[in-house]
Length: 437
Ligand code: S3P
Image 1 (tube, rainbow, N blue to C red):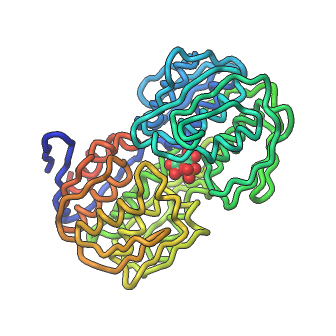
Image 2 (tube, protein in one colour):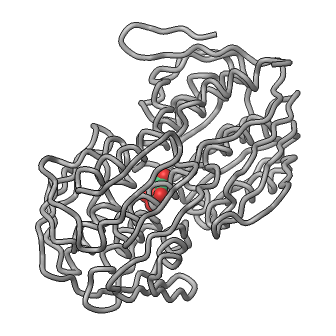
């Protein structure tokens, strides 16, 4: 059942009697951004299949086109003719990164030494997101980059420089976007660059740059990149997005009459902290047909109704499950004791302040979720119906949709935001919750 309210796209959901079916999630957002951007800097031509249909990855493609890159798109197939490392063209207008932090931060790194003048901006959410984490180390490498409030906030402006210096940088936050921005800038440096992460984060950048011929030395949390003259374009078959699959895993284990099979999901070990959390909680989830696709592990996942134990999630697991942590708050409402999440302060700097939005939204639906400085305390409770605001954050809209289906319904404001990463989410939800479809 769907309703619209004037002014904002809202969606009303009813409780589901059963949840069954097979679903294929969209191509991975992180890998799609990288496949397009890195190949744009390469020599040759690349074909990317199962490219994410989300608006975020379309933002990256549009920015690259504005930088003179020849890109053709036919559904989920994208072909990129590489412009070579120093072949980007100065854009004639502001590069619009939309809602996408990955586009803005990775492009900042790629453009810092590319010799073009560029301005990067985006929507209201993106213009509130912290940029000092990339601006400061890029300046240290010799980039001329600035932004609002001295470079803390977008828009960002990048001026051409002759060459960058190699640096050693130890980011304070564990962020794959920061690491990737610095490794991309390092391609243009005159000496080696080393990034030492405070904790392991997703490594799609390292995998793809290596496949394209970059020289990377990786030792635990330290990654060193040697500057190169050229990158080789490579075809990429993008696996299904684990972060999208996580919603169906959650629905499958929480609904009392459920069996959901999710096909072709990327299971890069730097992304699957959420599977560890599910296992700790006693969830009934199985990996089937495990295989390797284009250098990334892939499998089908099956989730069944489960009885969950409460758990604690701390800073060690957060970077490996950064986009899935909000789902732990929902899982905790159905577990057999108090679930505590800590070390997740970074959630405050996402598309919305997810620490606050999760607590407010789930509480509005009757859940007992108390926000702490860097996480939540979650007490088992019954979800009642209600109206919730997704803050136009795609992952919050999808979280509240599950809460509606599992409880007594929900009306979600900002429901259209799912198009950022998962445009067919509502259709897939309807199919999975309509018995015998
Ligand atoms: C991403 C890294 C993460 C994640 C985001 C995608 C990436 O952000 O939350 O959705 O593709 O590198 P941070 O690096 O800011 O943690």
